[in-house]
Length: 394
Image 1 (cartoon, rainbow, N blue to C red):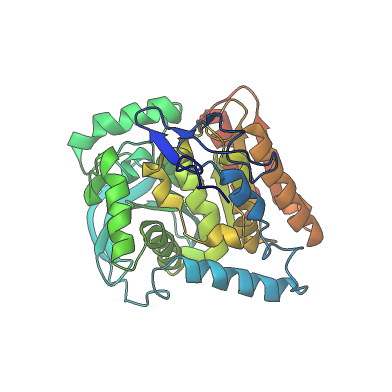
Image 2 (image 1 turned 30 degrees about the vertical axis):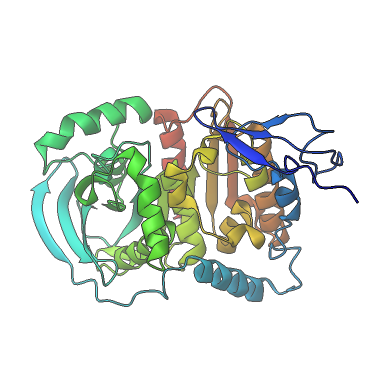
């Protein structure tokens, strides 16, 4: 047997282009192929050349319908337990919330105040809390802000900051860009909903983080035996429990609502918390395999770490996790022009969700819609439909 060519199997990543340059000997043409007869091959995006083989291994065996568990309630318990295990962050924190209320101000049809509370044993978090006029108890919305690579504001993206004039201009600009000039939280409060909106780690009072610091922050969490995405998931589930437990809230009528990363957070929180009766997710749902394609934003790392639970795709896809909330009412909107989520990924996810709710004889509780003329936004007409849907299901 002759000596092996040292070039065979060698991999080189091209700096600045995000492309992986592959050199090597002959390879098969199936998903495991890495090179062709010594010719260079290029894979767009910072993906390993063998990524098709890794994709092929993702069969999501714990998904409802694939799992050997045939009782849906038992499946929900098993699937939730697997997600919670892979959050890496320890078991649900039982630290007393110990809320402190400040900066109360009467608004048009509601009252705003800030509440500082312990979502974990590690840190006190400040949130905006809006309460409608009237005797209550009221339905409520856990409002979850987006990512947007904009960290100076978090809760202020969705609630007008009466408490901080320095953030107002930034918040208004964000509102104009994505929400038709509206503050979604204020709109909900005027419609009779208690609203709670807190900063995720890195935004607003808990930041601002620089874009290129995200990856290091996530890495440091992993080195500390924890997880950035797992922390956010735990905090959102705890926030749902706090909101549902307020005397002013009808605890059976609490929903999560979010846009973009906030949408991811909304369906994730519904999967992890029984305190949420419904969830509305605008512009974040896809199949993982369909999203992991050259050019997609998720391949850049950085912001994706807020939504990355290592090992979870070995068991469940995104729509499978969201399905843990079935058969509760759920709304998923996407923009037909949204470049972050390929159309085939949205279709695959919607088909998966539909099959689960149908299996529960609850397809009427699932509201799926694509807005063909819209991109990655949550504009007024989308908001109005979400508000009407909330009025119906809550």
